[in-house]
Length: 161
Image (cartoon, rainbow, N blue to C red; front, top):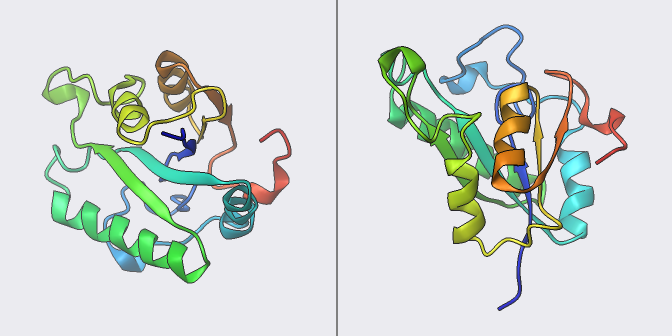
């Protein structure tokens, strides 16, 4: 079976602009960062699949629900399709450290490890793009490369990945 090249993406700050809304759980608050579709289009042509890896602690805090989160993720999938891209999957941690320890919250690597196994990843060619040290640490723990960008920046400005 052929292995997949996976580009893991943090959601808020990388795909979605969260300058005005720390918690994005309403479609009306969704705004894509500049260059998202152009940059990912380049990687789609190279055979990469895209997977979101996201901490969504607002769920455990009672700010929004899993239904809200899944609605946002479905909208992202639809918007990707409109731009000729496919979001293969999304994994999110609903926990917050104040409610106890979990293994899925970044910088933990469990969500990435689950995705790597589920999607038969080529570890040497897969990588993560995130906007926090936790994103980078999670990817490193899972055994893949990681690239840190400035939150809410234009993805076309980055040439290292």
